[in-house]
Length: 184
Image (tube, rainbow, N blue to C red):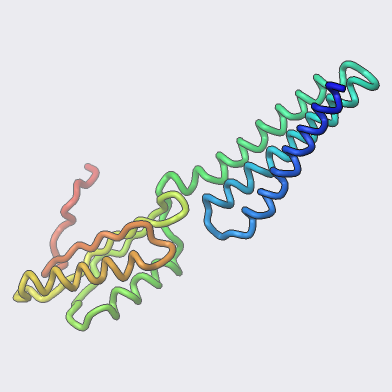
């Protein structure tokens, strides 16, 4: 009797996890897709755990610990794969050249008074990018006008689905040395 309850509960939980996995895979959001991956992991481990437990009761005692070893190996390989996949997005890798070209095009066409684009950088921040832009505006431009151009550009860049946050720096010339600390 206890065995039937155990099997019934595990089958129910596994079916619910399977339905949740199918549901979550329909979304494009990275977090929801991570839930789908987690539900799939649960379906596999629950299925192997249940099958080996039932087989151990009916046939050989060593099938259950063998199932535990299989689950442990599966868990280690799955998490190792996940770490390897995600480590590149966590270390701040540069965006691909086509995305940088897209940013440059948007920046150059943002306002007619942009005289020069000094820097365009985009680097990974999770599944999105942090964007840094240095633009040159006329030296005699009023501060409030320069501010508004920069702020509108920041808002435009942050509307891109790939951009988490944008930083727009404004200068009046581009021949100076870099302002940030350089390696000696």
